[in-house]
Length: 208
Image (tube, rainbow, N blue to C red; front, side, top):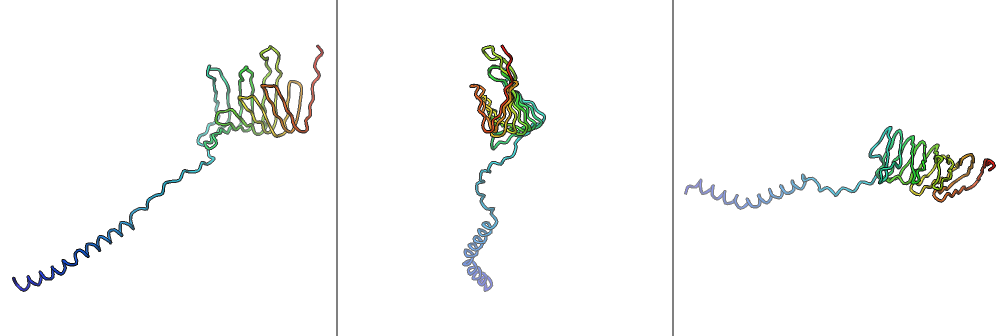
């Protein structure tokens, strides 16, 4: 073996002693680089809090609903409607609502704006609110006079046939006229409650 090859071999042996150390250093540097460049773990996204924003619109619309027998129950008209999913309510501009009760009595409600709950069982009328029950005949054949409510706010309960308001109201029943600061009317039991500053004018009845 020559002197040169012997020197090379000795040098290689010395270098070989440090190879594991070098490999460990490279591995450590590589691990550090991966940690620095790996994207952070995303936290589970929190459920977005519901916001009061409409999820759909209707413009210049007409909606009809029918009962199980196919009879018309209601008609709703408006210039625009907005549905809010967080409260499941429908807001209607220039609303006109026509309701047909179980005894075929027709009630028409109008207002600058209406707010209905999800199943349409409650309707709030806001701004120049008017509810009119057309004249009819009851089950016993007796005439039922025209009935009209006027207020800046009327709360209509469709299924129980009630109308309430906590604001000044005018009631017209046939030729009679009443006014009050608040009202609760039950059409099923035919009970009317007027509250505060109640005034009334009852028209003279014709002699029998």
